[in-house]
View 1: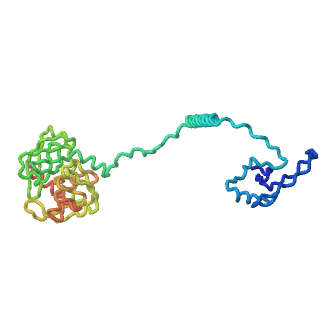
View 2 (view 1 turned 135 degrees about the vertical axis):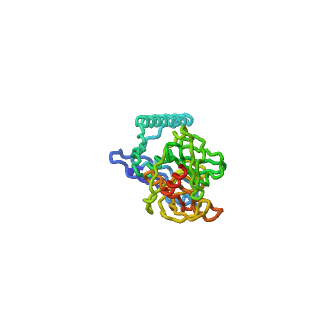
View 3 (view 1 turned 90 degrees about the vertical axis):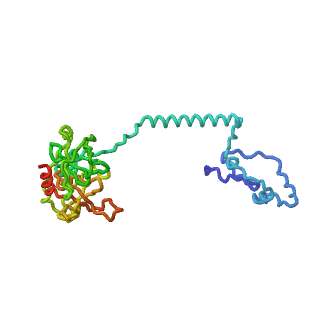
Amino acid sequence: MPPHLGNPFRGPDYIPGPPPANAAPPAPGPPPAKAAPAAPGLPPSGSVTPATVRERIPSFVPSSPAAAPQAGVTVTPPAARPRTGRRRAGVVIGTLALSIAAGGLAGAVTGSRDPAPIDLPQAAAPPAAAQGSITAAAASVLPGVVSVRAGRATGSGFAIDQQGHVVTNAHVVEGASDVSLVLSNGRTVDARVIGADEDNDLAVLQVSTADAAGLRALTLGRSAQLRVGDPVLAVGSPLGLEGTVTAGIVSAVDRQARFGDNNTRQSAIQTDAAINPGNSGGPLVNTAGQVVGVNTAIATLGTTRAGNIGIGFAIPVDRMTTIVKSLLD
């Protein structure tokens, strides 16, 4: 409210202020009439206060500020109000027009600015696996590893030359008359047992020359050069899962373990690479991709717990080469 309007309240005790300086003197008129006697129960005229009026007239509402101009201020009477229906229609139309204009403006602003593109940075392809890495070793070994199926028994094996000779465990093919191999490319080929040494749990299989073209002969290393802590990979078909690679280290190089038909104690390589049923006969290789052992047995916590517990055994490749040569002669 502008401050020059003063107090907007005008009650019975309202006293107008002095007239403006340039106002004409009031014209002489008849003397003021005497005030009529006050009605019983009401205070004398001139002593009625707004509080008194409010007490006797509960519905009293002070006049609005716009209806109480200060003395000496000319107030222009408000223009006649338009009809309610037209006024409401005008307000609705005006609001609608304003909303449309605001919506159009927002659309214009939004449409004129393209959203920033989302950038999800991606790293470049890693370099090729370095020679001697686990990745490179696995890639070089997998094409020479097979899954062996002999009757109801399953195991693993690996090619040792280009003539189709495959090494596996003797207990995998024991008593089987029908042996087949699943190659790394998924093709199944027939094989026959040409020699076995049950005491050392080793056997040699033979596939045809045509089928041997799908096999890559693995390089044989030297188990005598192994040291505790050397990284190694066990490759095979645990639980029938062809082409499985697990990694670990050499836990011991001359561990005495019992395996083979005679159950005699033999020197074996101990590893913590995961070995499970189906890994039997598969290769244990170093990071150069060289075969250092033949996975043969695992330690268990009882007959009801035949899974890997981190203690596996492999026949050293130095002994394997001696036995295989004797079987091929």
